[in-house]
Image (tube, protein in one colour):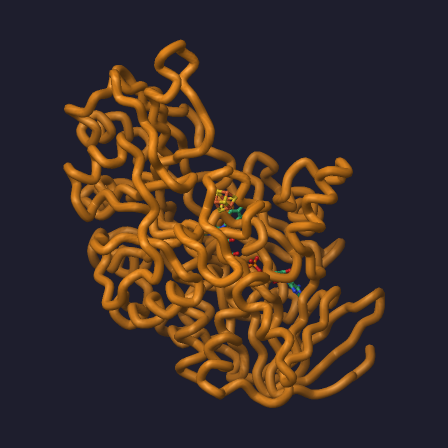
Length: 480
Ligand SMILES: Cc1cc2nc3c(=O)[nH]c(=O)nc-3n(C[C@H](O)[C@H](O)[C@H](O)COP(=O)(O)OP(=O)(O)OC[C@H]3O[C@@H](n4cnc5c(N)ncnc54)[C@H](O)[C@@H]3O)c2cc1C
Ligand code: SF4
């Protein structure tokens, strides 16, 4: 193994988690002089992806193939999808960016379920606003979560059916806060609702590539692509070296500070391969579960929305039922679909109902002794908390949508296989007896190691995770 050099800071990964951390250090003039970023993948542009699709190498911009090749998935019914390239899954994400609700951070205290975060909504609030500015989020004036800043871009237009719900539910039914631009901003164009966000043909959504790539061109930052971090050399309470493989050769570098931003599967994998003795590493891997509902409208043409997901509904979210079953975020989907009846093509509305799960320690990332760098992912399925929420859905839908011009509705009987959100394998806690990282995201056991991303979520809420994990990265860099 070759010892190349020593650095002030080594960062693993180039997704939201790492990039927002670097952004804040740079903005506050705290970026050290010698920074090394180790990225396993390559810099791939949308153009590259489109060429590959045209040539039949992939049938989707989403790297299903590459995700699957990187792990041993013990439950093939439950895929875990991510883009292992420069920018991570910002390349293929959809750009939905709601904040978490304040009670998402206090699930145990408020509802007696799951775990509390050792952090409050109020502590994270300024960083939410900053992350929204960096991503140039389009969003409404009024929101169900408190906000001290305005969204930088105007909200996307609602559909005609959304408008009825917005009138009835006020700030519980809002234009979806999203990183799909509602108007031209810089090098990004307005979303045209084409519904292929994993390739975004008009560069509407924020990506690391179109928003933060300049960080990797700074003089003090050295980006090494094709470098797979395999483990950390630890001694006492410190990380002494970072081991990685590049073009078939093994290297080790030393650094004053090491930051993991490799996502919830690979943060855990790297720690497990490093002999981390914290008993919670890898445990609790989870994500949300969602299913679609189709509402056949009577006489109402459902038109007018300006993005593929137009609205978020919070009517089944932070209710008293949360002590019995999981909260639900309602998304109004506006992709290209029609009702198969002449004269009624647009008399339909499509919703996704997305439920929170509670992390369960039996679902986990495990060391693969045959190939330690291809982790085993063991996931047994949704918890009773989610299944009970699904069981109660049609009763709740009857109430929420009552009195609206609906002929009938049909709910899917099965959850979608994935919501593409990988969370909770290195949970945050107030001490090492109940988690892996502190609230400033330093590892409980190592003085110079920070762990970023949704792996640190102790409870996941039904809301999309990326705005929250980006805000956490800003906070971690700010508190350094
Ligand atoms: C199709 C799709 C749609 C999505 N839509 C949304 C959405 O609308 N809203 C939302 O909030 N979230 C969405 N997500 C989830 C969102 O993309 C993730 O939450 C987010 O990308 C996580 O950021 P991250 O930086 O923590 O991890 P990642 O984006 O996974 O980045 C991890 C980085 O680390 C690198 N890496 C990993 N292991 C190693 C290693 N061993 N050595 C070196 N480098 C390594 C990877 O190559 C990558 O660059 C979506 C995801 C997908 C796949
Ligand atoms: S709907 Fe179309 S334009 Fe809008 S973000 Fe998705 S791909 Fe881009």
